[in-house]
Image (cartoon, rainbow, N blue to C red):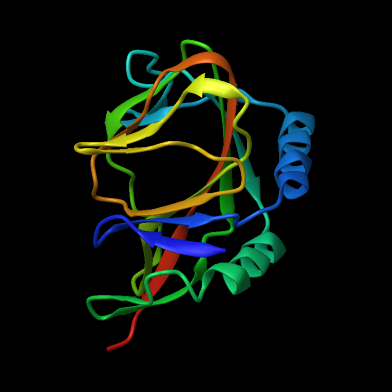
Length: 182
């Protein structure tokens, strides 16, 4: 594994997962079953295809979060302000993008567990690369998805899941959790 610091708040990790690990999680997510992804609105969660038209599986697994965190911790941002990184959010989201699907420009929301613990960084693993398009695009930086590679970035950064032109793209996403130290 190799950490690539692209900016102060965007990092990739080469070969975070093996091809087999990625394929196993694609199979697991397909067995659970995908549903149209929603977005947060003032009236709650809604399907808004003008913003995002991909599919999603929500999957909770504390053991998986702990196992990935042990591997990720040496590479992850360890502190932000008065808060120390303490692990991964056990609420995982698998995303599936078919040809023509995308998630337009947006900022990721923080997962707030309680008054002292919240997420500040997104953590994603690209599960396949047998498709065209589907880059993760920031204002002046484009990340080419590579099977098994991980992407870490600050929630506050505007980005998009660019349209898939051919094939199907799979991603696993969660959050890096931070706890106040003072």
